[in-house]
Length: 66
Image 1 (cartoon, rainbow, N blue to C red):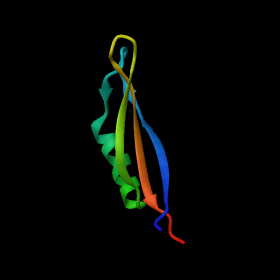
Image 2 (image 1 turned 90 degrees about the horizontal axis):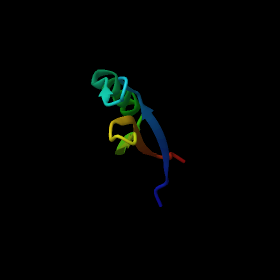
Image 3 (image 1 turned 45 degrees about the vertical axis):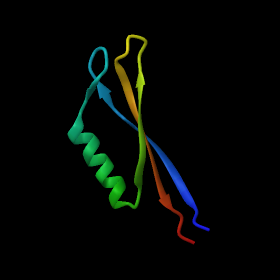
Image 4 (image 1 turned 180 degrees about the vertical axis):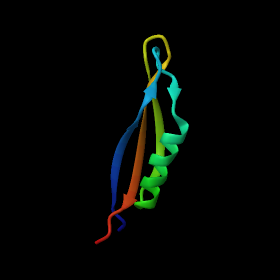
């Protein structure tokens, strides 16, 4: 049976009221995880009361090698 390990990574969101994502930085971070064998499974935006994004939570997985 295949086994997996999971990683939760939080991407920074800038701006006074949030919502400003530095796409190039996020892409570089995700590409580095990919090079290390991690696969992005899902991304979830965490919002403030007024609806602006305060952070992006990325969930990644990779196979555990025995």
